Length: 453
Image (cartoon, rainbow, N blue to C red):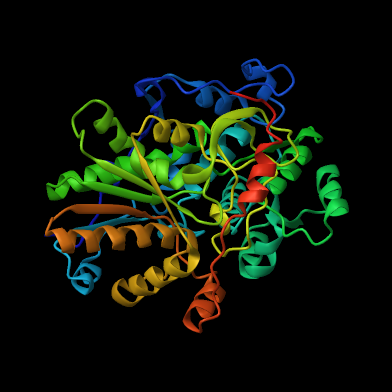
């Protein structure tokens, strides 16, 4: 059997898959924070171009990918589907382990799949500058790359703890022309307010979102760009799963278990949603789909399913999602891209419907799995991706114990070349586990904008 499955350029995926029309129940509407009523497209225009707003609410199952976006994506897509046979042998498991290698993009992760699309739609509508937030730097790097391709300016508010933990991510963003600001900052009202309350704040994705949203909303030539959570972001990422389905068809197998790490939900959803369609229509009713999150920010496994803000300052529309509360500040773990208080509405909805499962791990066991993967397959995974690897290894061990020859597939969402400090700490016994504070979560949930929803 093939170890690496490639697609030809003429097999390029040319349409994104939109799961919204296939859901057994519609996801709850986005609400205006002032009125509590569903948000109209016009209310979103200060932040997003109309092309993306239309995708956010579209009920079309298939949405054509513009040629300019396809041209940009073709620089690294289609990405290979690879079998982790050396890991299988090391684990002595009868299971097959496959992964979709999204680390081959110029920024080294899955994030450019949507960054390129978002930059294109903004450029088409005359936007000069994009603002955004980033945790570990994967999304900021991707948007810096995409805006560079389309000749736009880019301002990135990077979570302060990650800004200092991952200086080379900042350098990468600046290399592509972006301005990178540690968040919370003195650049915005929301940032100054946080610093006044806590001068040593490590920052959070929620705070960085507040700053980026405020920046975009107060400058006419700028729009805001989000790297996860929203429907149009997950839509753009489905190119991953659509390619993977074609590749599995080529080798004549269908996975039994799909795994992906989750912070906001983009890489996980992009990989699994095309397969979720098969589960929803009954073709693969027994397919297991597992979302893996950190114990430090376990929004699915410990959060409340309710309406909440996407940012700390409470400036975004209200999303029905699993949340730890928009004022929650997560511990300073290395998986910065997973340190988010909420979860994509689509992912949250599927979890509520019990279409998908979720599991959470502390970071020491996650990096033990990452080291095993590196020493068998030779690939150094991002801390976020390592969460998926942990769950895959555990599933493969269960197969060894039961004798089941399952096909386990996961999304290798990014490489860890900028995360070697975390590996150094793991190798030399300095890496510490971090868990969320239930008391802090309870206080954050008490500040929810809507009650009993």
